[in-house]
Length: 318
Image 1: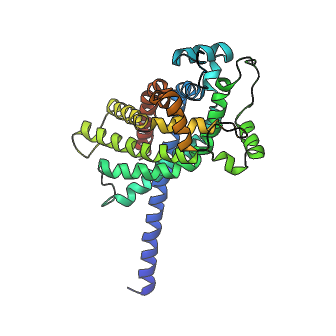
Image 2 (image 1 turned 180 degrees about the horizontal axis):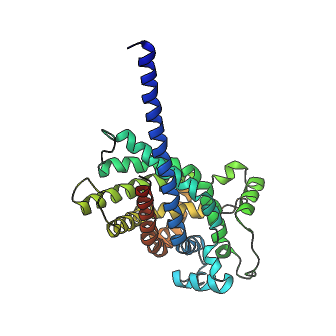
Image 3 (image 1 turned 60 degrees about the horizontal axis):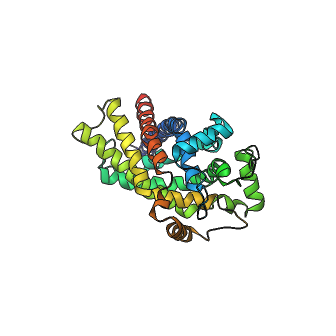
């Protein structure tokens, strides 16, 4: 065979390999987007209550907190803002849900490809932990500004002065938050306020999620081949994996939320460690778990919906 023939054959094989790689990436992008949309729709009202409880000011001695608990936060939110108040801040994550989950599942998929001994070989739970951690790093750069905008919108009623009118709001929507931050809170850097606790949440959190998810799937399947699992098993595995995220990183999420809603010009906290110390000093360990109930109530159904939607969509794409 001539050099040209060999070269042409090698080129063709390379092109085929690149096409297969791009096809796999596209499948992860599409399936991740569908899964993310399912998670957001199911879980956002719970997330709103979580952020309100996390960000409400510590009451002065002798005073009661603004919200006595999750149900009180729901009642007050609906009374003051109507049912739509539970979906406040949804615009920012909805606008980026495609990108967020595309990055998360695609980064995980690329790391899976690197760790596989051969194409299509299943990975162990420990290998999925590594893949989840890598995906957590990648997704943090989009999660941080998105979470900042979402938390500002969700928390503004909780942070409002008691005498202020329920109709008076600081932010009119996601773009309003972004413009204000860019204009008066340090420019682009202001949108990445809370990046350290975001990384501290996303990296170990996603490592645990994907590790637990794979371990449960293999447990239900009785081995590494999980392709025959039914939707019920996928729902349970996804729901429990999602719960494991919050069990692992919840105090970090509280620190992230209070930093992101902290006043830029008169900050209460100088950084993540300072926020952690001050919450611990004023409220004890209980303060690091404010809103934990709504977070757990959200995580199981929302992540079950996310992983099921991802698996079904990914499977339907071949």
